Amino acid sequence: MRILFFGPNGSGKGTQGAILKDKYKTPHIESGAIFRENITNGTELGAKAKGYIDKGELVPDDITIPMILDRLKQADCSKGWLLDGFPRNKNQAVKLDEALKQAGMALDIVVEIILDREIAKNRIMGRRLCVNDNNHPNNIFIDVIKPNGDKCRVCGGDLKTRSDDQDENAINKRHAIYYNDQDGTIAAAYYFKDLAAKDDSIKYIILDGEPSVKQVTAELVSKL
Image 1: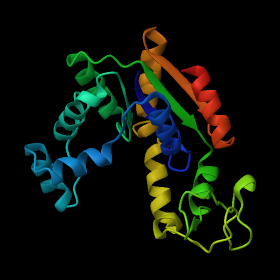
Image 2 (image 1 turned 90 degrees about the vertical axis):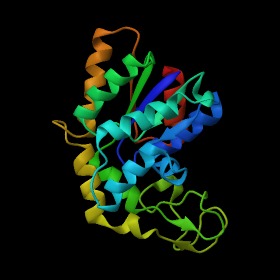
Image 3 (image 1 turned 180 degrees about the horizontal axis):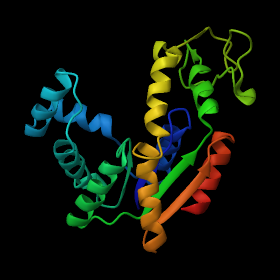
């Protein structure tokens, strides 16, 4: 299965991607990791990307998309992949679609997790990390995983927050890009939704991101 994943920060997109990776033994490929790997390995594309990143500029699509295609062509992706974090706008969606077709890599499934913007922000700002195990789920805005006061609900350990989780302005900026239905990330998702309406070979799956992780996973697996 070749899967493209969309969802705002706070929707549980990364969690669901990790679950699918384990369940179907499919590489979960995040665009940010591709940049880091190319820069660390000193590839030609990585060197070009670093030049833009060091200047605080966005890396052009004619560098980003070849990087992504190169990753998707690697041996571990021969039976499928799950791409997360790209495209971020409609123009990138068009270019990625064209590049995949030229490379003979048909897209099978597009997953969109929908979640109210305010709920998504609260989920991010409500996350609490257990000092004993960051994987212990604690969130002050989600009843089923609400911590015991300032202690981990799982082990009773102390809790801390990530500084970026508490930066409301940064969260709002990221969400402004995602929820922009004209040329933002959700517009990219809608581009593929329109394609799926015309092409039976592409399945477009919409998930409600508000229920529990297990409920969202069950719905996702049932629709794949």
